[in-house]
Length: 161
Image 1 (tube, rainbow, N blue to C red):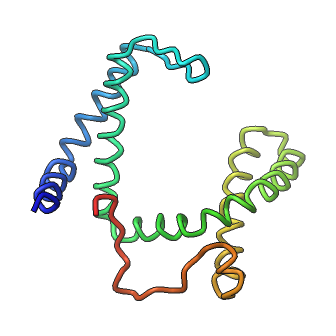
Image 2 (image 1 turned 180 degrees about the vertical axis):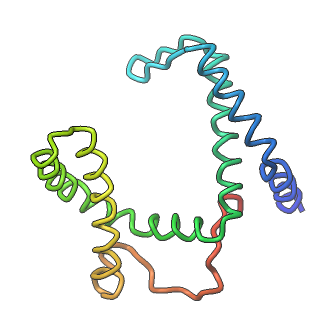
């Protein structure tokens, strides 16, 4: 019963655009008006109440954004697919990104452009490798800890369930 009541409360409060707007606006105001920083190396918090409030508002904002993203039908499926390929991305991203970053830098002589394009290629490349070579092969799928293909009924993903 507690689970159901909590689920109803989360759906009601985090599902509103008002929660997203207010938490995001308040978070931006706090970051802009109180530029308190956190140094994780020395564990230095300039203002513990402000930093705590920023952290809590950031969590609330991210939960509200994820609740809003659940309403878009294809977006949770995309993130689920990328999440299933995360180990493949982790293994293959750096060599692909490094290779293409150097190539694009030599061609364009634009550092920012080469960073962004090589990052996108570094993520898209392993996703293509996953789709073409790893997912169809049961041995490779087992090596990369991926499950076999599931039913189409279980498509939706929710952070709150």
